[in-house]
Length: 392
Image 1 (tube, rainbow, N blue to C red):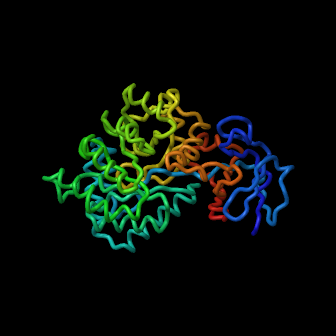
Image 2 (image 1 turned 135 degrees about the vertical axis):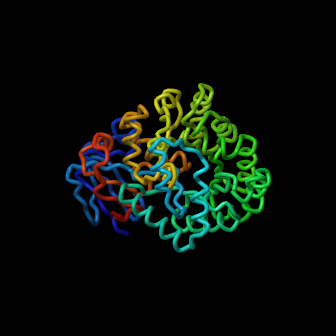
Image 3 (image 1 turned 180 degrees about the vertical axis):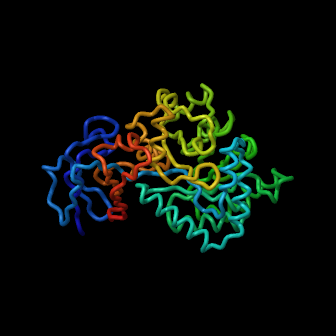
């Protein structure tokens, strides 16, 4: 087994308070990390690092855990440039635009869908993402949803069944019939390829009763619930997420005091995943991360990368938006983009650089992680290790 030491790290974020300065980021200055195969085996001051087979000199730059993108929609075909252009000219965003991508995705070959997925994964990796979740939801037939999940599962273990993205155009006059399909034949075909079940609980998509039925059926089939909640308006999604102990309530843009309190009280089970790329791309109201954090909620940041409402794969960009427009500190935003995303995926082996964690590291061309927000839009990712192997 080969060991590698990354040494002369100016500032190391471990996300383990016990290892560093006692802060949530567990910062260690003048640090080193030792990797053996796919795991971190040692972290600490560089002058105490054990010998290793190979060495990499960070030259005083910062190292952070690989970003954990816990919400994306990457199995799709087609382009919605015209929709974005119209929206930037004043047209309001609605859930209906998803139908455009459904038509293109149904028409695409498996090879085309996989090639598009791999292109986006490479794009995200070059920006420091080492773990990603992705969903179905652009097929909305039994065969198309199942093939989307098969394609995704070949490239990540974090795969989500989202047959309940919108009511299929084929069932426009029979939404109850579509819910029956999503909770019946489609679920049976899709569950073997997924870990999670999701639903878009929103006006124009699925109401609270429909969402409960879909998530409950998914849980009975062995899938763990997560939910698109309260993105476009106030609704029952957050309360349903807490009631069903969903791993995450995603978007959380329009919240009542009761919703915020519920997420604060459920911080150990249900993560509030915020997706600032969606607000940027739709000119919508920003989620109030400060309000959630002050209530004790666990917050994650993710890209929501999709062709309609958030076509970005950049976690650094989302960190900068969260700091600038969602009232997060740079420390909070980085934690939420790493450890917070891991919590949203109920993982303990990622999002941290403690011994035993998966060796997913990002070297920044900067002396501190604060530069991710301080220098927005600048390509600061200098190197990426994924599962202990240099990937970028």
